[in-house]
Amino acid sequence: MARIGKYQAVKGMGDSFPEESGRWRALENWACSVAGRFGYGEIRTPLVEPTELFVRSIGEETDIVEKEMFTFPGSGNKSFSLRPEGTAGVVRACLEGNVFASNPLARYFYLGPMFRRERPQAGRRRQFHQFGAEALGSRHPALDAELIDLLLLFLEECGLTGWTLAVNSVGCPECRPAYRERLGRYLEEVEEKLCDNCRRRRETNPLRALDCKNPGCRKLAAAGPKPLDSLCPDCSSHLAAVRELLTGLDLPFSLDPLMVRGLDYYTSLVFEVTGPALGAQDAVAGGGRYDNLVGELGGPDLGAAGFSVGLERLLLGLAGKEIPPVPAPAGRLYLAAVGPESFRSQFNLLSRLRRRGFTALTDYGKRSLKAQMREANKLGVDRVVIRGPEELSAGTVKIKDMESGKETTVPENETITSLTRCISS
RNA sequence: GUGAGCGUAGCUCAGUUGGUUAGAGCACCUGGUUGUGGCCCAGGUGGCCGGGGGUUCGAGUCCCCUCGCUCACCCCA
Image (cartoon, rainbow, N blue to C red; front, side):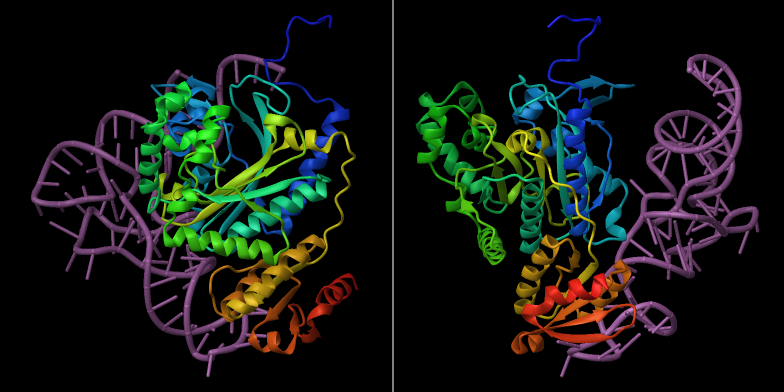
């Protein structure tokens, strides 16, 4: 093509004109809508952070940090980098803003450009865009399930079909060292068959071998020890609990013992969504727990998890299909539960309500009904759906109108229609 | 780049001529009610007083340096 001007965009970074930017806006609208229904508010963090932040969080021996960051000197001997991913900045912001002081469970989503110096190809650019969600402050397995639910609902509502969800556990500081050693011994045995990179990292970061794209290494990894076989009781029961919750939500998934993430901060549960798009770049979204990252970066010891979606890849997966418009928001609800059995029912209802356009929130601690009502009030919801052992055995739920204070009891299977009716009237 | 002002709890701020263990309101958590919000009551978590150095028996308080924020100037539009 003839170049009219003198300059062209930097490699791997392009422009969007209205025909295309409209589709971007549509994705962004869906992201805001879905995240909002789950109680996630938008966070905006800088595109530039101290290089050290990424080195510490993503890991020194990762592809991203080793060779893909856009790094440049700042004043003094400072080093800055364009963000290659979103989580580190969000955690940094949460600590700097001390959000945990006034919000024990912080939930945020972000949208924006990320930067990695890779060879561009279909679904991979140097400036690419992500929608991500992070929840910090709980180790409850429902948080993992909630994030996956959010992610899948977003993908579905944008119109993506044919995706698959894989989950796995990569262990924690309790069980990973032992596994690392096992894997290290195995890799030593098969050393001469490994690619150069894996051979070099065999001692510094052996888990990277599981993630290697080299076909030879993949085969070796498949034959070797898996993180799954070395999980501690906590990681193991966490994985089981998340699997159970996903099943309870009717979300289809498979366990993939070889799936790991390319970032070192992940612990315990990890997940990945692959799309129908194209060969090697088929990962549309990925995420998992990072229970140690907050502490690692100098914050309190608290559980956290998140995911991010590659929007370029999502658009590829949508293959030019029209993106549906975002519906008007339905009402705001809070689901209160008493006891673990009713929580499971409420968690399922929560997901169904969000799929019907409701903003639906709940508490993942084992807090008293009083505390839950107090939170519901603080959140300013229209109605609270209460379900405890009493309702559970009667097959009903209680719906409380927070303005009038009136409570009505309705049969379980009429909950959604009843809520739809009373909110719209 | 120059100058001024301000840095005390998550937030807004007290803190005496330098004097024991640094306070209040709001926010957050728990309880008062073995299952019910706002109001109220009781209790609780939370501070390297921005950081470093100095003066002093003793520094949140005085001095110096440094970092950060705000404003003005300069510059740019």
